[in-house]
Length: 196
Image (cartoon, rainbow, N blue to C red; front, side, top):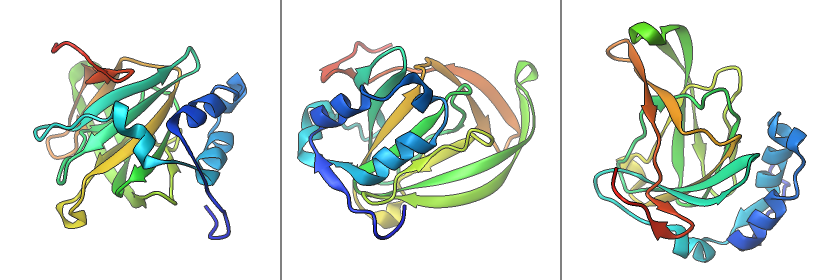
C-alpha cells in the first residue's frame, strides 16, 4: 500500500456488504481485494460480537460465508503462532484491525503429502497492521502467522479465503514433515461451536 492511500473506517457489517458486491473474478486473482483492504479499515469496536479468546490457541471465528468466500476473524493472544500451512490452492487476503502480526512465508523445495515428507526454505517475513494488509502469494502460498511476544499486545486478523475450504496441509520445517488436517471454527456468526 502506498503511503498516500487514505483508509476509510467502516463497520464489520458494511465491510461484509461491500465484500458481497465483488464479482466472482475478483476472488480468482489478488489485486481487486487487496486494493479494497488497503483503502478500507474495519472499525475495531464493531468486531466485538465475533471475537473469542483462548490462552492455549488462537481462535477462528466465522463472520460471513458464501460460495465465493469466507470471512474469519482470528484472535491472537501474545505469543500465539499458527502452524506453517497452505490454503488448498485458494486465495487469501489478511488485514489486522487490532494490533499487529508477522507473516513468515516459505518456499516448498519438495513435498510428498502421501508420504508425509517435505522440505521448506524461508522466503520472507512481513508485518501486518491496521494500515498494511497483505495477500498470500498464490505461487508460494505456504506461510505461518505469529503474534510475537515482543509486540506485547493481543491482535485480531480478518482473513478472506476464496472458495471456502475445510482442510489444509500443515508443515514442520524442522522435522521435514507435512500432513493434512481438518479445520474448525471456534464460533460461527457470533455463537460458540461445539467442541470437536
